Length: 340
Image 1: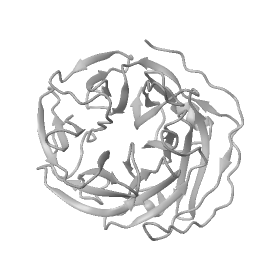
Image 2: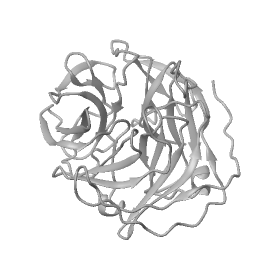
Image 3: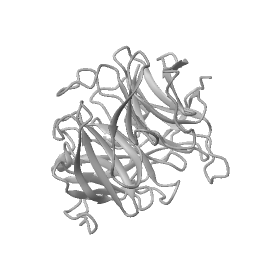
Image 4: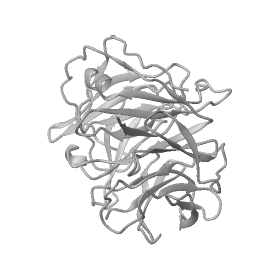
């Protein structure tokens, strides 16, 4: 079911923050001057109905997105049609088995064209691979203790073009890098506690270019893990934080417009943000009007899909509040960029 998008003209709130300093637990913040206010403010609106969606990634080489919903995988066409995919794949619908997809033309060792990689809480505990034909196979075992709660591809090369997986236990997160043969290499076991739709920063993202960027929904911070295992604070979001509330989902905006940003909004009963069971969308025009720029990190909260654009350059980093979702929205997983 496809919904209309709407654009509201509200005044955006802007918070300027700085880049982080070294240290896994005691980051240093250097503040930057406040940016100019936006003339427009964007709102996430319903794009298509989905059964308990937790993640969306893509596009594949054929322009189709991949959606994880209800413990299954679906394919989402540009027209907004969802169809079944990989019938033998199944995960626990109550768990957040996030997914990742290498870009077309992914460099380095080949992970297989249009192959989807999903967090696995069963056997193996780690990652399974789902081919473009829907065949499922074990891929890698992750032995770090805790909950596997983040997955993303390195498309910059600073992590060797490998698949990155985050596993959180208590106040710390372990980051592992996995090559195309399933070999696992530890990057760090002492990163700040994070979870959600992690992403690797492009070359344009200031001092954090090529780092793995991860959100902390409990404290509201956005952190970077370097290829050598360093842990830096990128910025504090200006959004409400706490369990099932704070920053959860991420993606870097492409250089050109003509796309929709898409976010899973999962129905979560008995939660302060009970969700809608839809995929939410924002157009690139709406984001640009609200002040988001190419190369910015778009980060959305789990509660209400409140959204910041984080801009980093050699001079520092700044945060701009660019969009909100429905008050009841329960955002999950990555923010995906769907070309029009």
